Length: 332
Ligand SMILES: NC(=O)c1ccc[n+]([C@@H]2O[C@H](COP(=O)([O-])OP(=O)(O)OC[C@H]3O[C@@H](n4cnc5c(N)ncnc54)[C@H](O)[C@@H]3O)[C@@H](O)[C@H]2O)c1
Image 1 (cartoon, rainbow, N blue to C red):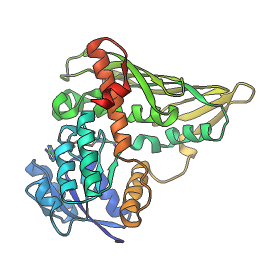
Image 2: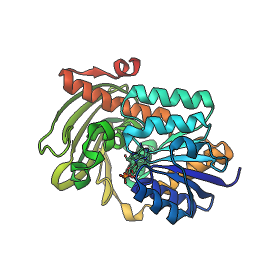
Image 3: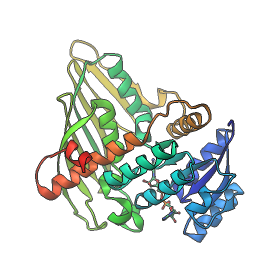
């Protein structure tokens, strides 16, 4: 298969952007779209000159749909992914894969059984400064990573109303937003073993936490600390990585990355000077290559599940006021 006919489930901002990018990459067309909201459905059908389907099941079973993008709210991913797996269509599911590890397990089992690809959009790893930080470590400039801290604070109006304000659909801040940071921390530090978290709902915009501290222990003996907030008009994004022979700091989505070995000079790299494919185009190219040429996908259901597991440990830890082993959450 050289050309992929895509079906889109949930035609909001993200899925439409992904579908647009797939078309621009020159290897796909959008065959059909579905969305419970008539306005979103009509807008997507008109933009892509695509047919409409009344449900995810109907869309996935169309003979002209080869593969499916799931861009619905997180709380709907399970049903949508199961529909695509039942129809044996390869899947690109937006993050978070699900809102619990149990949901992720169901999706992974259904896809394994059907023999279909489950790709999860854990795209943060591909953003320039995040990807560059991994290469600084791979190239041995600052030794082995031992402690990582990430601050992500902002004020998203969208989080204070609509589906994003409801735990049932969004999963919570750690799932809807910070599965990105949790996945990035795992990308740098390796597998997580234990999580301790404290969280609060300060502004009451959502029915879940709008602020959390998450402390993590990793298999390599290292530690991590995530501070997230969705009620901060003064936004901030910062990564600090301490390694055995130096450290590294970067500004996330903008600015620069600096690293310095204890016995060397500081090196600064501006985000603007890092070339490469747009992160979303890169993840979609990987998905398309996996479908058309059986290439190894950049992210799988396993990566999605592990990020959800880290968040679920944090929720259990905050509820029960104790550190929670990741194995505990993966076993249930
Ligand atoms: N990777 C990223 O950078 C990134 C950025 C934004 C959003 N996202 C993810 O994309 C997904 C959608 O976010 P968005 O910003 O596009 O939201 P959105 O509100 O713009 O779009 C969601 C769409 O899903 C539809 N929908 C609701 N219930 C549905 C159901 N049961 N089945 C099918 N469709 C349903 C809605 O009508 C809406 O059109 C979420 O999982 C979110 O976490 C990822």
